[in-house]
Length: 280
Image 1 (spheres, rainbow, N blue to C red):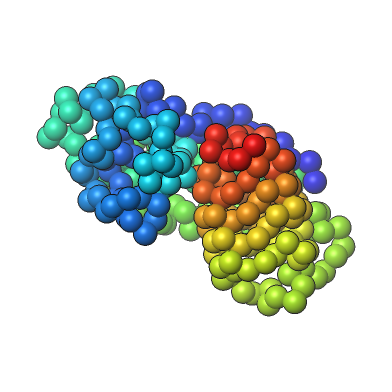
Image 2: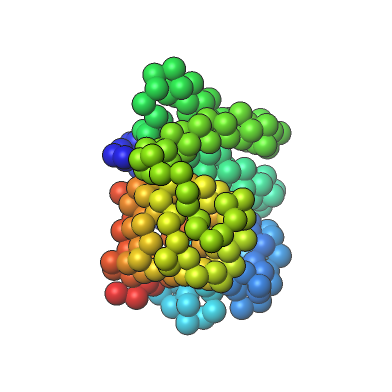
C-alpha cells in the first residue's frame, strides 16, 4: 500500500500564533485526563497570557499539563479566529465570546472530518467512490466557511454519518491490500474486542487490523507493524509505540500521536510530526 498525502491536510496543521487561545479557554480540563486540576469550559486557563500565549509552554509536563501536550485542534483555532470572526478576539468582543468558543468546538469536529476525508481521497483508487469522497470534501470545506449563526446551528452528527461509510469502505480496501490475502489477525484475542487497556500486543499480528475506537490506553505496541491498521478514534494515551511502524496506518491524528509514548525510531505518517516530549 502506497500512502499519498492530500495537500488539504497541510491546511489542517495547527498554527497557534493565528489563534486566540481557544483551547485554553473553551475546553473543560479534567484532572483525570492529564491536567493538575479541573477547569470549567469557557474559563481561561491560569497560564494563558494577554497575548494568548502560554506562560509554561516549554514546561507543560513539569507543570502537570500532560493534556496540553496531547491536544491538537487540526487548525480549527486559526480558522475560527481568522475567518469566522475576522481576527476579532474574545477579549475585544466579550459579548461574542460564547459564540466563539462554541464555534471552535464545532470547527474542531469539521476539521477532523476533513482530515479523514482528505486521507480517504488520497487512498481511494475506485473512481466513483473517489468522486463521492471529493464531493463530501467540498461540502465539508463549505461548512467550515459558514457565517457564525449558521455554523452553530448545523448538525455535525448528521454530516459525520454521511462520511462514515466512505471512510470504512476505504479502510476495508486498504486493510485487505495490507494483509495481502491473510485472514487472521489479533491472534489469541477476540477480533471484535475493543478494550485493550494495558494489554501486551507486542507480538500480535496487527497488520490491517480494525482498531477504530479501540481503547489502547497503556497498551504495549512496541515494535509493532501497523501497516493498513484503522486507528480512527483509537485511544492511544500512554500506549508504547516505540520503534513501531505507523507510517501506513490509517486515520491517525496528531493528537493521538501526542498522547502516546514513542521515540525517534517510531515511524509516522508523512503529515504527522514527532512530538518534542518523546524520548529521543
